[in-house]
Image 1: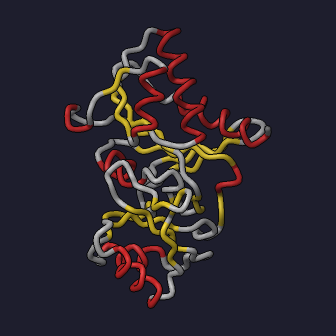
Image 2: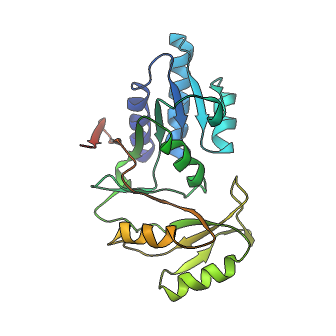
Length: 227
């Protein structure tokens, strides 16, 4: 119950950043679900004109059901702000995303946004990244060879499955989860993963967030990038 209250507080705080006429990137995840409902309520009450850009098919369906107007990312000139969740963040404002297998689309939307805001509950803050597995999106062809490479590099890979069948992302790829437990050199790991043929994207989000809103029982606290 307290965890949901923290998520709700972060979500409500994020809706206050949305202004009439904005094009808003809509993230994916349980905290963002609270944000979508709060944003839809503001749109109804204040008659705001907001256009949403999705980061997953699940988010698009939810947003449309809530009455939020949606457009394709290629049909909007710019995304004013993206509000998204994160599975894990550190005090340097880096994060891991991808528990919901939507991180490729999330990263594309973030890349094309003027401002990126993450909303999380207090349990998502850690001194080091890696307590949750790092997801890597890979093409199905040759994925076994890539998994073998990750094993040789001591990255502890596991092909993500659901009921014994590989999970397929919205873009038609597989997810390989790396059980690293602690990532001491995230930038070096990012460079390594970016250099592997067959890797489409990974869940390391480094130097992406401009602001992180952390929900607490009593309200929120914020981390803001100095860049």
